[in-house]
Each structure stands twice: as structure tokens, then as C-alpha cells.
Length: 376
Image (cartoon, rainbow, N blue to C red):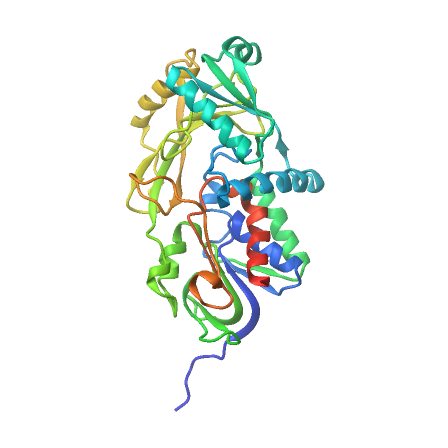
């Protein structure tokens, strides 16, 4: 009896997920001469975590020295500014102020400054209250750290440019291609069989799981990968509110970092529109995107610590994002988990878990990191 299964189509490398990190990984592989297909479940690139964030280019201040977050953020920031300048992608090195009010917060600011120094970020400036207000008259604080190399970027234009690079190098981005499962090859010279929901089957030497929020769930559908290598997924929702009218700030303004996020901060888009967020709300599902207008109350209280002049009624619910965390509410934030063959023993497989902030900033560096892992 004949099987109705078509024989799999051979392809060198498959990257699952066309968010900013998946696209950056595929670009690095394509530029290294690999034939790459990017499979994206949605009908457009970058509609997940990559579309629901602050679009900030981070300097690399907060992460543990030597961590993957710290290294890829500092390196990725330099790569990203150069890439945006070379490609004409809208971005702005507007700088940010991290503000403190109490003696305990000023101590945390000092620790942030030391951490940044350990990560190779040497351009931070300590500002007194008077110096900070000379830069931003509407600001209230006792002291601030100024990070001149923090900026903002048009993340969608960035992703379109990465897609163009992949296609110019002979790769392709396939939309509406939901990966249902992957049968991993046993042995170094076999091919992994990647199946999509419509019945397509690809046979690839290399598979990169860059599926963002879905990465751990997807990894559980990889036959041949031991479950102990797959971290538990946690979902930390962050809501944003936009400001009606123009903000009296030119810098981004951040409170001293909190446990699960960086506090309710003020960011600007390239048009000068201000938004506040994200807060932190642990949720059970990766699709809880509705913004609860009742959260505004907490936002007014948080923002008025550093901007007492925020008018009543000025905040409007905007959007929410979900951080793909691999550490829970009571645990310290986990580092990026980039798991290659030396971790799980499967040749040609890389899983990216917990790629939350600063994933956008780190993307180009993560792309090179994964390409190098696979080349080794």
C-alpha cells in the first residue's frame, strides 16, 4: 500500500518565527551562505512580542555582568545603531534618565551605575536634582543617571530590512506557516523533518526555534528532544497607556528598576508621542492582550513620582505585550537561554527561550551568536 505522505522537501536551515530575533538569526545564517527558510505562523512578520514593546535601544545597564543579556545587549546596540544608520532606518539616540527619589533608590542607582560599568557601558553620567531639572524642567527626582547611548527605533522598518537581507541572500520568509511538529534526526548527518499545519514537510539540517512566547510549547512537540531541556514558560503581561497631547520631555524617563520589569517608564516614539508602561501582571495565557482601563490608577500614581504635573484624564489605554519569561513571579529574572547541540545533544538544533527585553536591542548579536554556535 502506498503512503500518501509526500516526500519532504530538502532545505538547509529552517528558522521558526519571524519576529526580530528569528529574522536576525535567519539573516546571519543567510549571510554565512546557508539556504534559509523562515516559517511564520501569522500572516505578517513581527506581530508577536516584536510588535508589542517599547521600541527602545537599550544601553546594557541592568543585566548581570557576563550574562548573555549583558553581552548581546552591549554588542547588539552597537551593531543596531550602525545597521540603522547604514540602511536609513528611522531611529534616534535620545538618551534616557533613570531617576531616584529616596536614599534607598539612590543606592540602587549607584548599583546600576556599577553594573553598567562592569558591562562595558562607560558613558553614564550622575546628575544632581538641579542638573536633571536643567535638562528636563518637568522632572522631579533627587538624582538621576543619564544614559546617552539609549535610543528608540522603528522596529517594523528594522524587521522589513532584515527580511530584505534574507531574501537578497537567497532565503525566504513563508507566512501562514504554522509548525505543527518536528521529528528530530537521530545522529549528526540526518535531517530534521519539520511539518506545518497544512501538511507541508521540510527536511532540514538545521532548525532554530525562535518562536517567542510559543518557543517552549513548540519544543515539547519536537520528538527526540528530552523534556528536561525545555524550561517552563511564564507570561508577564505589560500594559501601556499613551499620553493625550505632547509630553514635556525629550529624554526617556525610567524609575529605578523593579523586580520583574523596569518600572512604569516614559518612552517616546519617533513622532514625539509619549507612552507609559509597561506594568507587570502575571497571566496564564500568552494571548491576554486586552488593556484594563482600571490600571490607569496605578499608572498615574507611578508616573507622578517623577512627573508631578501629569494632568488628570491624560492617559489613554494603548496596547499590551507579554514577556516570554522562563522564570516565575518569585524568582530572579532568568538570562536568555540559547540552547545549542552542546546543551541538548541534538546536532543542528538551537532553541531560544526567554528572549524578553533586551531582545530587540540584542537581536543582531543573537543572530551572530546562533550562527557561530551552529558553525562550531
